[in-house]
Image 1 (cartoon, rainbow, N blue to C red):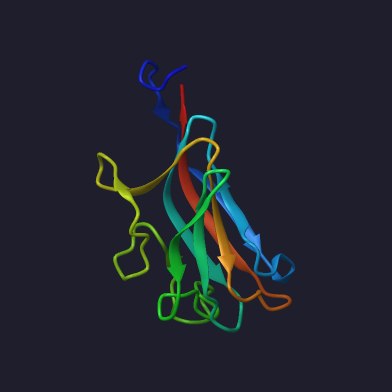
Image 2: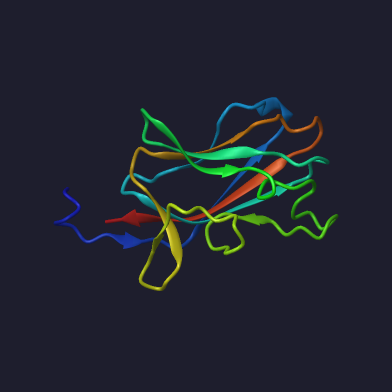
Length: 149
C-alpha cells in the first residue's frame, strides 16, 4: 500500500552486528539491509582488534548503484585496536558524534537524533582499503529502527 495512505510506526531499536575478518579481504561487506518498509540507521559503531589502523569507505547501495557516503581516512580512520580497551581510543561513532567522524549525509528526527534513511531494497556496506590482519577482526554494530504498518 502507498506510504501516504498507511500509518507506519518505528519498531524498537534493532542491533545488527557484523564481523569483518581477513577472509573478507577488501570487498564491500553488507552491514545492514533495509526492512521491507524502510529503516532508519541511528548509529554505526566500529571497533577493531587489528594492530594497525585501517582506512575504508561506508557505502550506500540502492540495489544498482553504490555511493560512498563516508571515507574513513586518517586521522578519522579506524584506529589500531579501536574500542577494545587496549588503547584509549573509544569505538568509532559515525552518526551521533561531533568529532569529525560523523556522516554528513544525515537527517534529524523529531527528538533531534541524527539518522540515515535507508529505503526498502537498499543496503549499507563497509569496504576496507586494506584487509584485516589474520586472526584479527573489525566489528561493526548498527543501531536501527524499521518501519511497520
